[in-house]
Amino acid sequence: YGVRDSVRWGSTLGRRRGLPLTGLRSHFFDATRRLAVESEWRVQSCSSGDGMAQKIHAARFDALPNSSARSGRHRARPRKRPAELQVIGAGCGRTGTTSLSMALERLGFGPCHSMAAVAKMVRERPWARALEEPERADWRGLLSGFGCSVDFPASVAYQWLLASFPDAKVILTVRDPHDWARSVATTIWSEYSAERSALLAPFRSAARRLGRAYRAHFFEDSDGGVMSGELRDTRALATRFEAWNARVAAAVPPERLLVFRASDGWAPLCAFLGVPVPRTPFPRANDSGAHTDRMLAIWRRAVAIEALYLALAIGAVAAAATRRGRTEAALAVSLALLLSAVGFLQPD
Image (cartoon, rainbow, N blue to C red; front, side, top):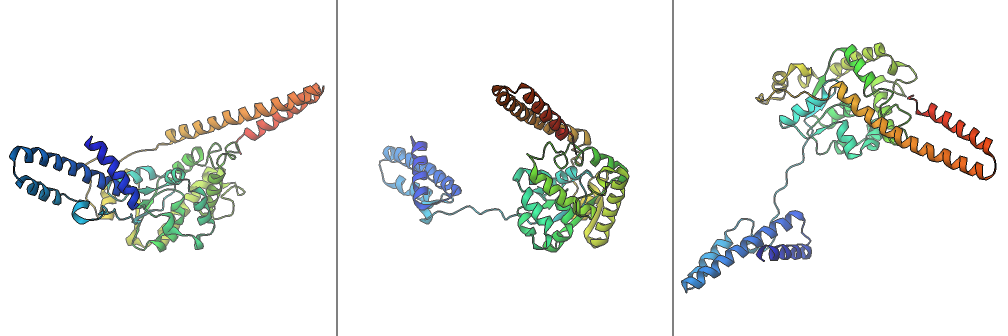
């Protein structure tokens, strides 16, 4: 009965005072402890037969931490200070950025902002607007609550992030340019990816807009390497990758920049950030094969949905034409829809 009564009492008091959830929890525990002390006092006072037990247990209740009975009002628990961006990852995706994000969080620089965080928080449109008009963007607001950032889209905004977070350091993740070009051509910039597949366009319009925005900064053009053909040319991609790394190295002061390979491990990273080296192995994650499997699973699911819509559309048209005695017209329209759908389902 005591716990049930304390829940009811804490909830009622919280509603009357307009307390937050932490306040309700505090009052709940105060009530539970008070009931326990009072119950102990009743037992001992009945057995002792004097008034001393009441004074002793009243003093014990006054000494309870965070007690509303002691202070006369609710004392909120101190909140953790929001994270400030301390590390900016300027390296492109597919350069060990997932492993780096895990390492930075393990070193205490988290939470880490990445493309996965953008998708999870459904922030594609705000990021697209920021990259389209970087001079007007609220960079501190976009990175609020994060201690570090890696990967697209934040990596292409490293210059504006440096201006917004003057104490932050920059890590440029690199790898062999030709290996990187082959990796992005089969993963994040593949014809089956959310950025380029026409099939996924109805479902991922915001992701496509964001992809065009950050590719425009990488390729230094207006459409993200599409019209120039560089997006499909691995040699051109490798050249662009080298040019990007050179731009970052020239723009960031040497004392604030670390050029890093995932194979380097903990030592250079910890020395650069001024933290001790962990005893655990350096994390390894997100290889190209696993990324491709996830991407194709999303694409196949979209194929199934589009196929269902197509079948319903063809069935409706055929049924309407058949009712009017136009069987040949129904077949012609259905065939036209099918052929156009086949063309639409092909990656762009």
